[in-house]
Image (cartoon, rainbow, N blue to C red; front, side):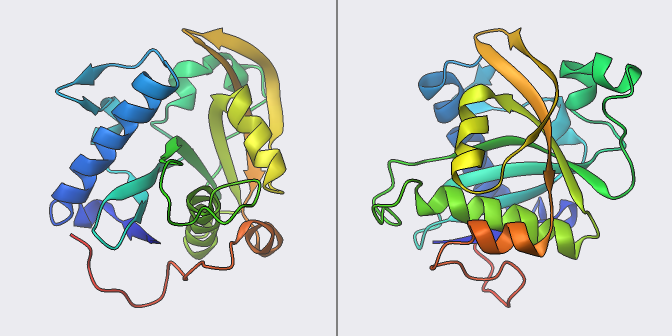
Length: 207
């Protein structure tokens, strides 16, 4: 498996992969985590998927999507402005041109490939490394995200701790928290699994 980038210009060409991503999101967010998300015809899609995001996907050799994240400029529109609108008003969150929002992160940790016996599955670490690598290459130095406290602990275990913004809050069935993550080479080297293949190296299109 390896991580790939799907830019806004590639959405149409990668339609099958994006559809697989939406089905993965439905399985993880609704079925496994019991998040309060809308699922239609087995797919989880929201309004921010229409904002021309960049997607980071981890795909298997058979082109199944087993990890995904959605990236949008933090200057908006963003999910943070909807779920945590008070943070910007209070000055706790200050979006800038070098900040990117990561949302809808999920992985299929039932995958046998990459289960090397470490504390975290390789697909999780591959996604972390790919997000950081893409962010650096795109000129971003900081990542803002809203997630649940369980995922916050996973980030810490990976060696990529999140700096909280504000206090955790109940959002539906989730105890959610907002925070900032560095996008730098030190973080990349800490999270990168031994099997990682650069996101920026030439690849055969997996569409």
